[in-house]
Length: 281
Image (spheres, rainbow, N blue to C red):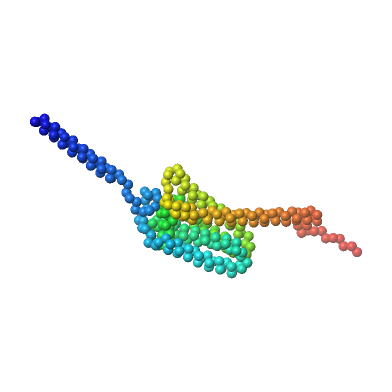
């Protein structure tokens, strides 16, 4: 009888220990579960302190941005045509492009540089636009050092340069228009290359994506919104290269013609001490 009681006590103790171990395992499993993300951005574990969802719907945000840019381009185009009534359609298109770039660089991107630490929690129009775009690149909400560096350079250098390109395009036959265009276009191409390269290299080597997986955000926002800064600069570069090439060829022809003329006629003396011809009676 005593042995039966001991056996029963041992079974009870073993059962209680097993239940305790199972409960501990469940508790441990619950503890290690990752917390639910408090924002819609990728990667899901990225920290975005103070994030507040946008209050305005996307169509309203896009309409507001498009309206402001359209008003700026329309007004500046009217001024450009008054300054230079002979401005061609192609040059007017180039003028509008550089005005668009200048406005975006100096004002929209300038807002990000000045307010990068509070964009996630702000409900101002530029902040909500940045939060919508950040669905394709969350680095804009984490004060990423690369983004701050490249955007600061864009605001301080390339924005004013784009306004200068627009000015020299509007002025009649400014000799600086093509050199400035070449510099601005190369800056845009280099900036886009760095922007894509840093993100795609991180995705390839670290498996870390900053864009949501939906096609709208990757192909529409990340690729589509930046692609014009590849296509348009290439077109402007091709035109500027062709113009510079024609100008240099024309200059070479003029130099050749002048060399031929002076070889036949003799170059004039430049000393100013020409000998007076002798007078005859």
